[in-house]
Amino acid sequence: MPDTRESKKELVLDAAFETFLKKGYMNTKMSEVAARSGLAKTTIYGYFSSKESLFVELLQSRVAVPYMSIGERLDRTLPYSGQLRQFIEMEMEMLFGLIQEKKIVPSLLLYTEFFTDTNVTETAQKILSYKFRTFIDIIGKGMESGEFRPGDPATAAACVIGAFNLYTAIACKASMEEMPDSFSGFSQDNKDFYEIIFSGLLQRTAMGNDE
Image 1: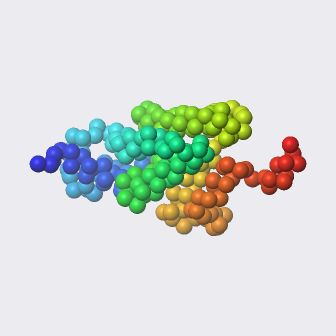
Image 2: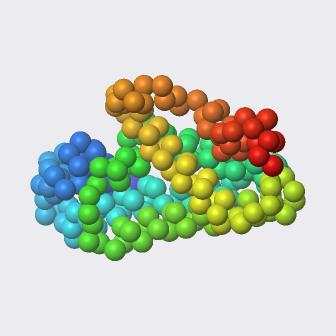
Image 3: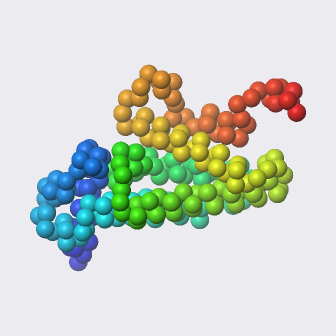
């Protein structure tokens, strides 16, 4: 027999996501979440003490938990560049899958303003720290093996992650709404992104002349 309490909680989370995405975090009222879920406002507060605690649950259960299992699913027999690419592809697949399934997406964070609940920032920091540690590990081993050029793994990881985070933010917005003219040439084909990340912007002849 299904757990009625848990099913109602999922109903609240689904309703909260839809409302946050439509109106933004600051403009959403718990009464609107209740109306969308079909449950009484008092019932909503039986599950979540505040709007922030509701958002934290969304962030933890529908972003953090699945995201922090990506590293466990990497094919460690691939070259280190292949492992980085696989991590990025898995993250992209997860993000766009969540958009299509209307559960929760990074854009929810982009539309969200200031939070006083430290659980929000702590959860976001855990996700970023997880990605940073995973990238440092892969890049460091790639440098040791000679596949990647020598350097500081942490610096390299920060550069890759910074580029990737902005890239995915633009890609997510492009998939949901019309982009400004300045992004009219943006493509969700990731081939160019990987080429720039692994080979840089300079022509190979130019790189040779600089050495």
